[in-house]
Length: 274
Image (cartoon, rainbow, N blue to C red; front, side, top):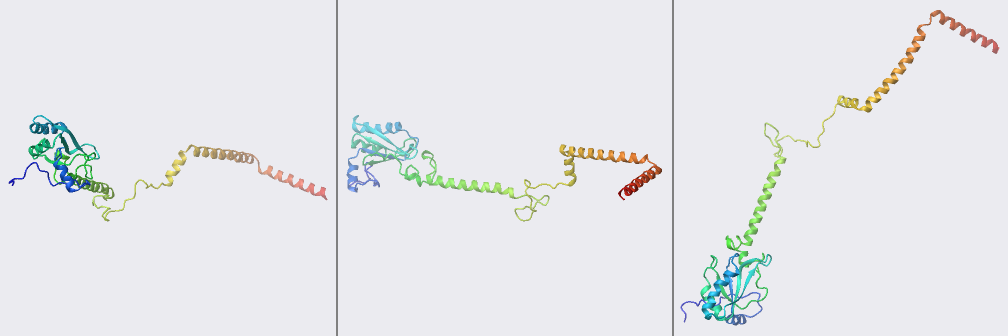
C-alpha cells in the first residue's frame, strides 16, 4: 500500500483523436519511452530541453541510452513553437525516471508538466486549437507573457472592443461637420435650433446688369462691334450734312424759277400728247 501517489505514474489524460481503446492506450503507456512536456514558454529552445532531460537519462541508465530525439510543438498556422514538446528516450526506464524527477520543476522560469505518452505520430506536433495553438490557450483569461500574452478569445474580445471604440471615435469626429454654429448665439443646426446653412460649394452670387455690361464692354469682340456701328453712323451723318449744305445755298427765287420750269415742261408734255 502506497501512502503517496508515485510520481512516475501516467495521468488520466487520453488522446481524444486516437482510435485505440482505453486498454490499448494503457498498455502503450506502460511500455512507452516518450514523454509529453507541457506548459513550456514559447521562447524555450530545443537545446534547453535537451540539456535538462539528458541529465535524467544519464543518471538512470548509468551513461547508456539517453535522449533519442525531441519534437517541438508548433502552431498549426504560423509554424512557430506553441508551448509543448515530445521527448523520446531509448528505454522506458529512462522515461519514467525523467517523469519522476523533472515533472513539476522549473525550466526557463516556468513550472513544466510531464506525462507519459503512448508514442509520437506524425501530425501530433501541431496545435489543435482554433487559432492554431493549444486548446488551453484558447480559453486562457489571464495574461501570460511567456505564452503570447492574452488567450485567443481574450485577444479577440479586446480587438472587437478596440474596433468599436475606433468606430465611435470616427463617428464623433465626422459628426461635428454637421454641427455648424450659427454665430454668437452658439446655436447648432444639428439640434434643430440653428439656421439652415446652404452649401457654399454650389451657391452662386447673383450678377447685376451693370456688371454684365462692364464685362461686355471689356470684351474685344464687343468693342469691334461698337466701332463698326460708330463708323456707320459717321458715314450717314456726312451724307445728310452734304444735302443740307446744297439746300443752304439756294434762294427762294431760284426755287420758284425751278418750280415754274417744271410746270412748263409738264404743259408741253400734255400738248404733245393731245
